[in-house]
Amino acid sequence: MDYKFRCNCPITSALDILGDKWILVIIKQMLIEDKKTFKDFIESDESIAASILASKLKCLEELEIITKTQLPDNKKSNIYLLTEKGLALTPIIVELSIWSDENVRELNSIMRESPEIAIMKSDKNTFIQMIKDNYKTKTAIFS
Image (cartoon, rainbow, N blue to C red):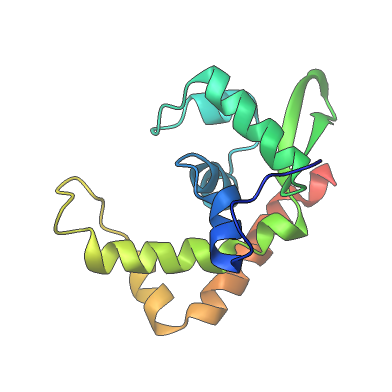
């Protein structure tokens, strides 16, 4: 895959991939909300359009952030799983959660309270490892 980057800056290059408004949402849904199928994503609260979702899943697959495989018991449905490269984004998801709680909550009156935020703030590294381990345990049957 020949991906176009704007410049040689590492931050800008990462944002060229992750800066789309749907990419981190999809990764968060997979990592934390156990979304695995196209239907799971479509039915989520974020209301992503089917055509956009298909495009973003394909992009994530091409970038090797996720893999696509068929469900073992239903060959008509595909399942999407995070790769190690995708799981490596866990600290970013956690940092964004903390940042949002501290800086966006006052602007978003409907933002839900999350007891996990206190845990994240008190022991971020343990929380990150817990999320990764949880994900691996839940998806081990598909590997």
